[in-house]
Length: 395
Image (cartoon, rainbow, N blue to C red; front, top):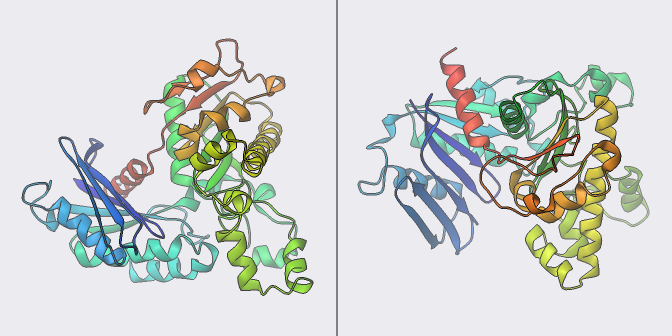
């Protein structure tokens, strides 16, 4: 069966059409810079690649263009929309309402909308993608795969915040976790690659959004993102961990209103706030030129990752493997190299030559003498969503 996977972000739509259960990618692509006059749509098949730069007013126009490419008489891969039997959607926040992959109904959409304030950069656009897909592919089953579902295995002692109990029992305030489809996918790939009884793994997902999770026997036992996807590691525009008293100081002493502070911590902080750049490639290039703010930001980023790794080694009582994944994790030898530097106490020994190699395949970048395997595993959230969607329809 043909499953269309949609990952609808704030200004982008990632898509893949996958034949299941063969896991064969029929076509894939990306719509970027939605809302601008120089938006870009990329569409790839086994034989061709097309790129267009044009004005794309909104997500509806963007998704209509995706459908037009897929069904184009010359470039397309299907004759009409009825050939697509299911559309799988990435949804970031499902709260406690969804612990599994779910068929989308009006009630499910209402629940996704309820969590918009907890994932303001994601849930509204995820929901928009669902609504548009329902119009364009009316005969397809619409399926939601939630980032938060993978972290149901985290024990209460790690999920619960040290605030009055009523907020946990009455309002479900707890750590939920995010990037679940990515962590699940790469941890399963690591298990296949290692072909051993590896028990303790730390998975490091580094992109514009960043998270790190501790895995014991394939199940997450702790995670850096919490109630909403904004704490933990330093991210592209999100601050990660801060002292919560800072928020009160900004409001009560410096006169900022809460909405402004919230926007600052989500949209204007992280690497962007520290350097003026949100793309790590630009920050690394500026650091090489001697930009001290960029160099400090890189040092802070690396230090935060290492600090979390150290705490997770303690929580796991050991470490067998580290996984680096997502855009930065897969492509920045600088970040990987500096995270693994001076970690010999944990038995981590990096091969600098292997670390510098670019590849789309799973690769091992540790020295043979390293007690800990250091893996770079390209994530494929779209394939993971397709697998879960197919399993739901055939269970």
